[in-house]
Image (cartoon, rainbow, N blue to C red):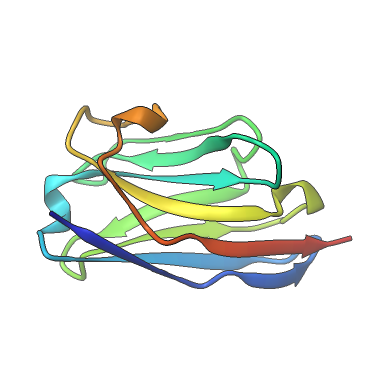
Length: 124
């Protein structure tokens, strides 16, 4: 089993940037495809970005393409989400997740382990 501990997030003005980190313990992160999801109040938990085990392949939700970048450092057992040009509609609780399935996993139910969530608030 892998434990995921998130850090980063907070309050930022529109147009600003934040970086989220997700550190794994218990198992080697390179065994897992990784992803980021987000959940706004009253809404479903939606896919944001995903990355393959080696980091060579990525995928993004259309709403964040060109603004967010997912990356991983398997030597540090950590995955990152760099968020630039933030908009008020990006406000949500963000979750990292680890999957034993697939290469680049965009399906929420295919993820096996989840981080604790971190709040991102973008003010207008």
